[in-house]
Structure formats: C-alpha cells, structure tokens
Image (tube, rainbow, N blue to C red; front, side):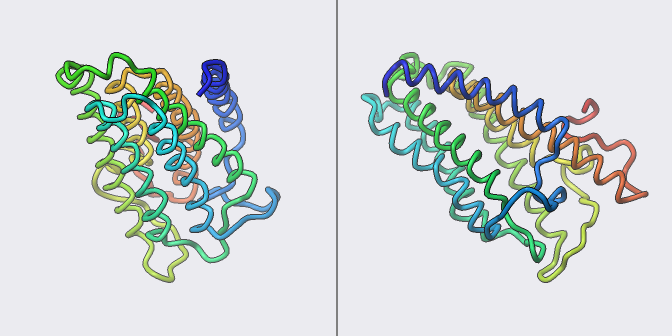
Length: 254
C-alpha cells in the first residue's frame, strides 16, 4: 500500500469516528430496537450482516499477505485473532440471530459499514505485516504490552460472546417481544456485548501498539457508546421495573 494512501485512509478513519459519534449522539441508527421507517430500502438481516462483515475479513487477509513479515510470530498471532473474530461475525453470527419478522438491514447503513470494514481490515493488515517494525522480533512476545493486550482481547471476546448468548436466548423461535436481559454482566450494564467488543479491540491495539488499531478502537467506541446509551434509554422507557442501578455500558460509570 502506498504511504500516502495509507496516511489518508488512517486520517479518514479518525475523522469518521469523530463525525459518527456526533451524529449518533443525536440520531439513533435505524436497526434493532431502533428500527423505523424513513431510512430507505433494506435487505434480509442475515444477508446484510454477512455482506457488512465480509470486507473486514477479506481486507485483512489480502493486505496482510502482501507484506514482508507475514510469518513473524506476533503479527501472525494478531492476524489470527482478527480473522477468527471476523470469521465468526461473517459466517456464523448471522445464522444465530433470532430476527423479528419484517426486520431488515438498511442499505444506507450497509454501504457505510462495508466501506469502513474494508478500510479497517486493509490498514490493520498492512500495518501488521509491513509497518509494525517493533512486532518482528520475538522479544515482542514477552513485552508487557503484548501480554496485557492479548489478555484484554480474550476477556473482551468472551464477555461479548457470553452476553450475545444471553441476549439471543431471550427470544424463543417465533417470538417477537423484548425482555429484560438478566445474568452475567447484564447485572451491571445494559450492553455488556458492546463493552466486550470495546475491550477486545483495545486489547488488540495495545498488543500491536498500532495506530490503525487505535483508530479502530476510536471508531468502535464512537459507534457503540451512543448505541448503548440509546438502548439503555429504550429499556428504561419500555420496562417500568428495569433495574435502576444498571448503567448503559461501563459498570458504575456510564
């Protein structure tokens, strides 16, 4: 990847994160609990999730294997973690969804999400195998940043998966209603799946000590924090018995 293109795309991700945060603080994205008319046509929800996540998987794969350090241990581990996540999100997660009849993934959201995911995969793949010079020595495998980052990634990964499982089991096959999630980290926050994802990619950024991964963290937080606040408000408005001490996304704080 040309250095000028790399720099431009990286700046674009940081800028998009700031713009997205400001937009979502005032306008809820129209899907899930917030789905509503007036946002144009949509596609089948499962197909939409597949199309949305696929560019990240392909972008990382393609640009990682263009670099000169693809077989160095630390980059290969980080590459594998990224790809495992997006393999599950692309090829497994869409088929575990229990979708409310009539729901669809809006094309306007799909196009924006595909563009980001493709750029994100490309930037992180190129950095890992070509630009992250500190990663290419085996000494990085015992660096505290790598160890802490991997542990944080694992903790976030399992928190997100456990929380998604609890949420998925609330709606029985054929069901259409909503219930209050209980158990696990739902004792503390309304959206522990979002918290898990933010922890996961923060760990990835620390383990790789990477500017593209930091941009990914910023974009993820800009996307998920407003969504968590919106979902939290929705729960409190819909359920009069919603736990009063439960926060939106960060235990005891937010």
